[in-house]
Amino acid sequence: MLFETAESTIFFWLVVGAVTLFAVLIHTIRSPKRTLGFPMAMMFALAVMHIAAGVHLIPGYFHQYDPYLNAIGYTRDSVAKGLQVSTIGFVMMALGIWLMTYLSDNRNVDFDAGRIPAQFLRLAQKTVLIIGLIFFLGITFVPSVAQIPTIGAVIVSGKNLLVVGICLSILRRVWLKQGMTMWQIAGISIMIPVANLLGNAILADAVSAIIIIGCFWLAIAGRHFGVARMLVSILLAGYIFLYLSTNYLLTRGQFRDVVWEPTSTLSERVDGLVNAISQFGPLSSDDQKQLYVLDSRLNQSLYTGMAIEKFEAQPDTFENGATLLAGLFAFVPRAIWTNKPVRGGSQFVSEHTGYQASAETTFGIGPFFEFYANFAMFGVLLFSFLMGMFVRYLDMRAFRALAEGRMAEAIPLTSGLVAFIQPLSNASSLFSTFYASLVIGFLIVKFMERYLDIQLFAEQQRRSRKA
Image (cartoon, rainbow, N blue to C red; front, side, top):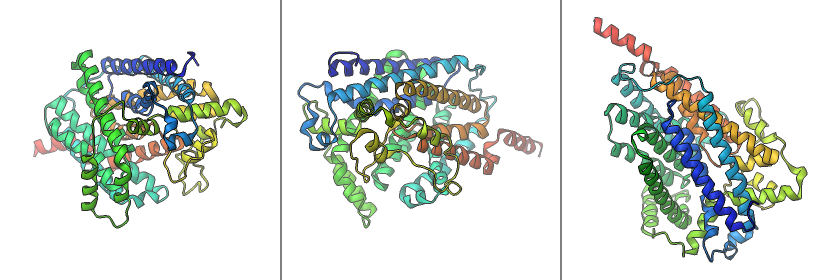
């Protein structure tokens, strides 16, 4: 480790991570190549899953006093090692984002109301929003659809169109001063986590969606903000997130008992949610229960650190690219490749940390854990850098397509980027949902091209004027 004590190491890398995050935010917002906010969203989502390493800096905090955390078998040194590796990967992602901005030959482009008629943007926004809402409500309240091989992955990915539709609503409001107000857009956005809570009491995807929507708004409107206003906005959003997530984690057990009861009604679930919210209390560094739940759910560094320690003892157990290769070929449908491997979750955590994770509990591994499990520190450096470049490239390409009104390209790309912002997914799951999101995006554009193709729209407008 960099320092003699785990606490000093954790503090140093948390500071490095915070500076890196803010640097990416300033760079992408102020870049003449512009952004739709997806590189920021990726960095924010990853930061969220490592932020609770900071609880180990609070005097008097000992995770071993909690039976669950003690059973995992990690130490404060484990957290320090994991955070160090993850933050180095975080910095390499930032370097990839920065380099791709300057390597790109994209000419500077911005929104031009003369190039994109207001009526066309309105039709596109409403079409995508409605289709996305149908997919979202369907998969939220009929989750069994997701179990259908191949088709299920495509249908699940369709819900990403709701996030794309909300982003287009922000675009209309900020660029054209039309459509829904920001309060109405915020109300629809809040519906995403609420619907997930009532439908399955799982919030991972919903949190990513809210981060993406917030970063999209910041990317579109942030150029008019000063650095101080952006910093205050981030700190305020961070506090709200910690408040809601901490209190939810403390009450989710009893709430899930209601939601996961097969015979529970919507009314009972709403009552259960209201009862959970009524128990919310203020954040306190003296409340050990709050610190325990944060450490257990928002401290991915502990698992990465345990993996590092296990690989130090058993260096012949690296994956050597196997899981990353499976991710690249995730586009092959399971209907064709019936034995397609699924690597990740509880099995992966148990295999590479020694902790016997329950198969009934969802465990995410995240990119830094997986990169290290394949090629040690070299894997973290290389693939984190490439991941940053890849997301920034798609982000700039999607911005240009959107600014020029090429919805046939913009919608599939933004839908794919939404799927890519999953901070705890393994490579196989990440790329399978990315590919599926591209497919569903292209299909929607094809079937609804009369509303989403700017050339067809312009031709119809010319015909109507001649008539």
